[in-house]
Length: 203
Image (cartoon, rainbow, N blue to C red; front, side, top):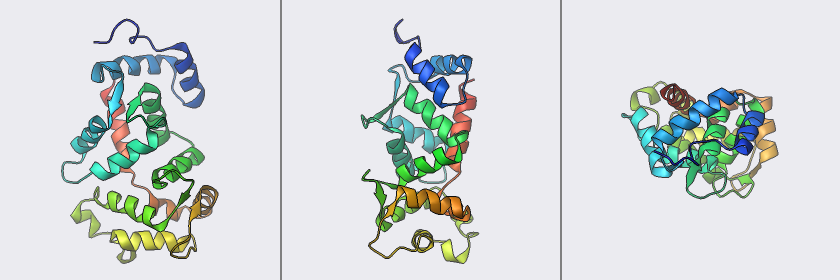
């Protein structure tokens, strides 16, 4: 469906992705062809991205979380994901190094991109995560984190911050490296499962 120019992955992008991900030249070429078949324009819009999430979570409301994930991967803020951004997203959420994943998690929570996280930003992301968890599963959560407010408070207290303080990227990463339990509180592992299913779909 693409023209002859769009059907070939540029050498520059290929080399950059080989350098920054674990994927081979063959994998990248194959995924690029199927990416173009699914997205003839060579880009995924935010609406398409949201619909992908919605199809995997029919019993939940993933729209808000999908919007935040999309924002964190839309590196040039143009409202679409091109192939390079998509592959970087796939790599980060499925096979990236711990430090890379934590840098991405910080970007996810840093809603305004100003380099620090407020308690309000934590609450916003945690609320969107809760929308992804079924009501039944929420009943099984520990008592001190079974609502978005409780979980956000628990995260904030862990970092020892006052109500109007901020968390820098360094504090965020170091705090989680020092106590992996906090990682469970800040993340939702379903995006990795979505990416894995998308990856399977491309074969």
